[in-house]
Length: 165
Image (tube, rainbow, N blue to C red; front, side, top):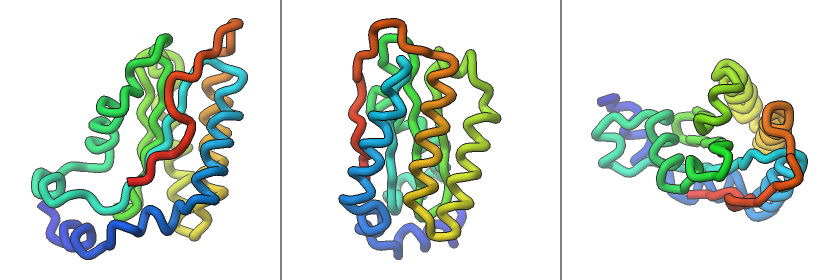
């Protein structure tokens, strides 16, 4: 267990995520997700999390593992075309993870998603949460549109509004 990481999470107030991603930015993110999903069959779910719980830290839960937990619990894996994508922001660890369902993972290399993650992390490090998040959503939408174009059906299976926890 990383003691420094444990203390950072324990000493960070839970409202941090809500402060960085307040109602105005959350509304913009929701609208951007809606636009990004318009021309394709993929589904994007955006999640921002502040400090992790003590039990998660004690078990050494990484940002990637936490993203995988949320991927399952939020049903991102349960879309009709196996075309769900989770964009997970772990604010305290300053990490971004993108997980794609098997239908997308077979067509889009993980390196593409990782490049989006690193770009978001760089923007966030500079304090530009808005542009970092919106650019990532646009890029994810572009990738989904390229590999999962709308075929006359485009159900909205996941909430477009970000989850801030």
